[in-house]
Amino acid sequence: MNDDNKIRYQTKKIKLSQSFLHFSILHRVSNFKIQVLLTIVLALFFSFFGVILIQNTGLYGMGIEGISQGFARLGTFLISYLNKGENAKQKAYIAYNILFWAITLVLNIPLLILAYFKVGKRFFKLTTIFMIASTIFGIAIGFIPNIEKLFIFGNLIRNTPQKIVDYKVQIVFWNREKDAIKQLSLFLYGIAWAIIQAFIASALFILSSSSGGFDILGMWYSRKYFKSVGSIFMIIHLISLLIANTAGTFIPIGLTLNNNPKIANDVVAWSISTFFNPNLISGIVMILLNGFVVNLLFPKYNLVHVQIYSSKAFEINELLKNNENNTYATSITKIIGGYTLKEKNVINTTCMYFDAASLLLFVRKIDTNAFFTITDIKKADGYIYVSQKIEENDINKKAK
Image (cartoon, rainbow, N blue to C red; front, top):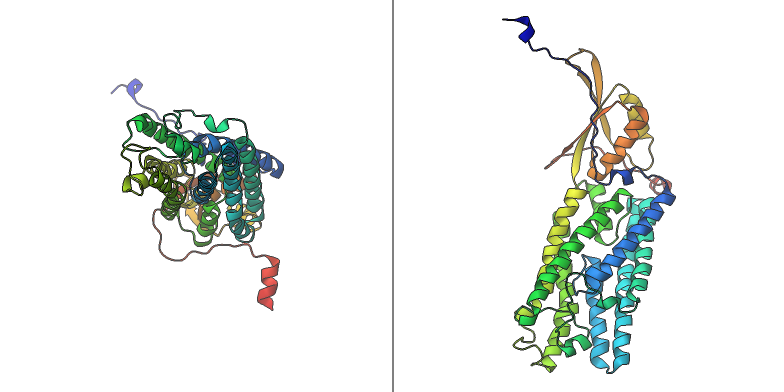
């Protein structure tokens, strides 16, 4: 055999760099003032698209937001239903615009208190800023003249019976021929909001903030019990949607059709088809899609196993122990390198996925050449040691 045909192999070291989270540039933002600015910008986008895609279309947001919309729409309907004249229409719209954002903010107060004491002060501050900013922006955008007539995928008011429009009932029917194109438009609005809301929510979590509502509860629960609550949230959002649909759509349209039975052809008041209307079904699809997209962009409640291969393992471990904001329970394993046969150290820890990227930043402060891996934990049973920050007041209480 000719030596010139021999295949030679060369071993060389290459750099691997993969982002653990989408929008990884946001995760590098640690300055609180910049985090506040970005949170406010995200609140503006959230409010604008919330008005265009949800408020104007008759769809419902997720969780507390949806419940707020349901009761705000019920209040708007009652004002229009019990009063007459153009003045009543104006009062009804003003009532809805203020009621929705105000109810959302009030319902979030207990959860914000939970965030302050159980999640973290920075998380509490940024979430509070987002809630206040989105409320202010939402009310301001809602009062832009004729903003309620702005539609992207299709006008959902056109060809709607005038009495339904006058009573501020936002609904699309299954068995009205003129509503056929509106049904498609509703699903497009729902899909658009599911994706946009997922991107905004993921960006907020990376900034150590949230859009409020049940996300605060989820953050606390997952950090305290190291459990994913994705499926639980899906059920909570669906229940919230049913409550919102009953209060904001089914009751108003039932009363409207009951007193005006012929305005919508063969649509019957209090029927199953008016309860399971296209708005409701589109909302269900929206919730399912949103959960899927959020899990792709930011699997915030997933438990992961992290391994850090470094020659400075003990220095890294000391830094992690003294870190006040995020504490990690670690163990150090000694291994023998297969090529050099030298002893090395590996740091092991189990944490939530949203803490893994923060952990990488701490590691890079000590060792820029450390090899960092994360592995999803699908199921776990047993006990692990976790570090928790204890406030000085709690220590004094225990001492007493």
